[in-house]
Amino acid sequence: MERCSSVSRRHDDRKSCLVKWKDKTSVLLLSSAFGIKLDGSCKRWAKEQRQRVDVRQPAIVRSYNTYLGRVDIWTD
Image (tube, rainbow, N blue to C red; front, top):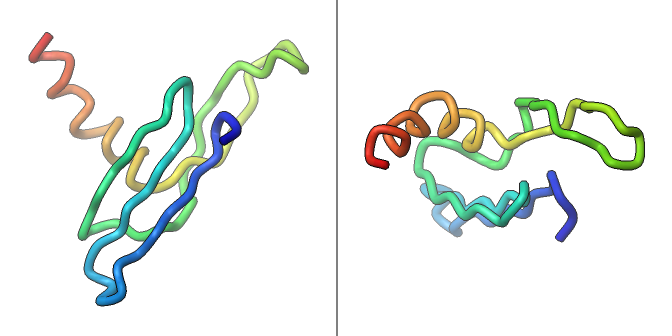
């Protein structure tokens, strides 16, 4: 799986969605609130272009980084 790519699966009853997003490592997120939309973006370093570029990011990843990511910082 390439960096900054994602794969998602939705349960048959459409009540939950599993998203796998590859950044430096793969991240698995399960949600009943978010779907599979790629509606966010973030900046990542591109070696080939030697600059920061915008990449598409699933909504669930963006929400996690905005709200829940701070919880992890406090638990360190």
